[in-house]
View 1 (cartoon, rainbow, N blue to C red):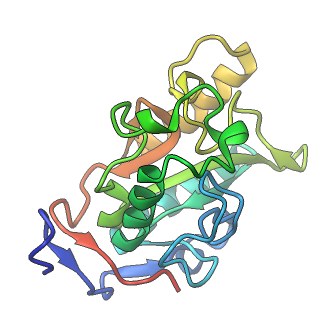
View 2 (spheres, rainbow, N blue to C red; view 1 turned 180 degrees about the vertical axis):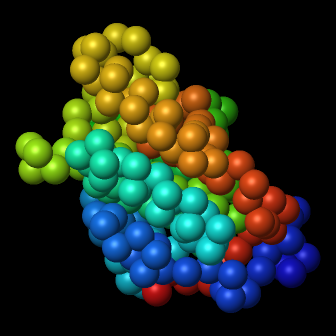
Length: 213
């Protein structure tokens, strides 16, 4: 445990699995391994473009994935387990208000100096507990990602799961994602339609910092 941290931080990875080993049908687009994210750099701790989760979350996600496949969809993952060092990277970036390289894409209507007060950036993330996943749906019949009326990591009201100023089809797509994920043991986040956390997460009070790799 790092005594400087308010919460216990662990480097133990034995309770985690590679999601693709448990859910082979998932599509991975690990944004924080790439430079296409709200910062514009690869994020600290992302050493490979893979998704890691606790064993319990991965097993629950497999059940959800099987149900989505029966409906004609595959799951597309943008992020899963996130090391504490990655969250620390977010915080350092947010404190540097001069770096606005990706503003026009990810936060065009929000001042960077307000990201903390508005709750878009925080010093701890549920992702670091290992049972949270950010995802969307891929429509197998159309061969493309399903239209959710907004995109991953956009800082704004349109990302709220119950946002109504989108088309009926987009609302239905968000509802489908939310309903099946909840049916299989995940809780949604009101502010982000793509964000789900295992209800009975195995490490509710521990944050992890081993790298993604």
